[in-house]
Image (tube, rainbow, N blue to C red; front, side, top):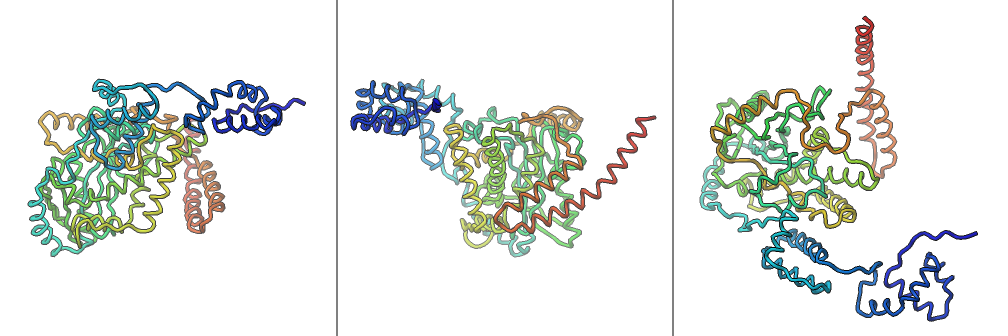
Length: 514
């Protein structure tokens, strides 16, 4: 019978090896069988002997399979990869340096190329790159004011309250649907380049106490009170409000504070809540919470949430999102990620922020011990390695389309919140937006990834999921007792739902019959 050879392209090194075997009088047929190619491929290699040896002697890449003419696009691609590496290593980069590097890369690639200012501007625009000013972490901060606040106000707080009774909370913007392969331009944009913000941004209010024993439930603010992803669900995993700009307002913040004040009162406690001063954080008379405001423009060196807590939360969130994205890509499946998926991931990510991490972030901004003291536990280091492994796999799939892991995690760290003073027009707009956002609407919260119809599982779906979880728990190496215990509890909930849903079905069928 005739053997069917799969189409195989030999590398330059393999083609040179073929030529050596031909010189040793081996037959084309035996060589073709060894390299699993058709005999005609061996014949072509013999015919192009001189050209192949010239490439080899000129130090060409031995693993290169095809020869092609190098173009200016190769220089741009190489420069983009170099730029990504430089940014991840915090190397200062400017226009002249980029042009010099482009010329150097062109020389190495053997391309006649001359970088110009016009070319550089087009390259930057193509990749949405804006140069950020790197004037240092303390640029624009009056360190004397910071030190006075720590010596006087903070010292007083620490004298009057125990660690468990000192809280900090602040908002941060989250690009909740930002996929790894879509984040490159956003990772490098200027922090004030507001027109470049994606539509899928929500606001998160993040808060915890000083010893990390009380992580306050996340409070989320979107742009539509009734996005399609919420349809037919009676409750949400996180507290949620909305206005068209996804901004925290003083009304929202006051409502959140009063709920927390009531809870603290039920626990017979008195606590301090440390906040930065902005238009949304207005003074409120509370029974159990003392509001203490930080000096203006000192967030990066005085506020624990921005000392690492918020970044750690986003790290865990993007670890979840990137892992789901990798699984879909590896199995060639369409990827779905709506706002409800994101809220579940936020909740899981928040549970992943450890008590040690939160306590360390307070210490980092000198609430206790020495400044810059930051302790990581073993589980945090293990999670970081797991995420890096996921990122390495994504890099193999998407190549230069994705930035470094740190840039992806920090893609929206400059978008903590809008702290500007509101004009009368802003205030009127927010009032109108809140009214509009609370009206039921089929408008989607951002773009849909995958099926736009929300999936509402039935009892049968729940039982099927239980079977999958139990069987999966039998395949993992670590003990699965906790997983099985949770599955048993979940099955009890499902069983209690069966008679309720049957009754609802009977009533519905009765009225339909009438």
